[in-house]
Length: 142
Image 1: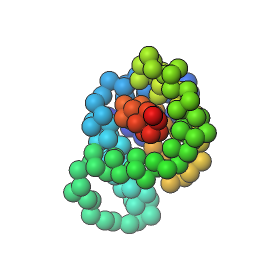
Image 2: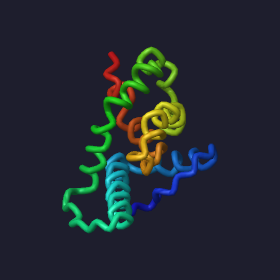
Image 3: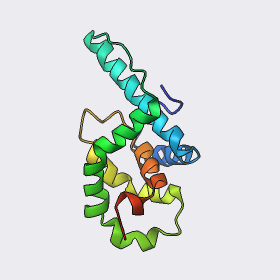
Image 4: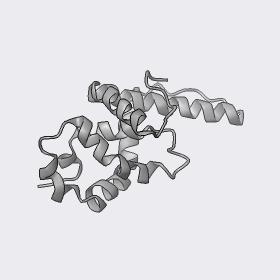
């Protein structure tokens, strides 16, 4: 498991601290962290169910990128359409990754918070990844 762990506390201080910690990492390291978290989650679930399997040799950063792609449509709907980022992007232009990440957390929680299959994903990690990818690019704003 990665250095950030999967125990996620939804308190504001904890979320803020996690965003701050993740924001110091390079995007590739964040994708790797997300991939490692998924592998750890799969191992835990498999162990609980008595299932044994061979771990993939796929690079963890590629696993992390695939997770973002798997959630892209739902995240796009919440962040780009419902939150209406493209119309609000001017308000975000001079904000740091920390502030942007904090602003999109509620949208991310609407996607992963109610899904038991994705509850292992720390929303601050997804928020920082998307913010570092660039919301304008993620939302295909002009």
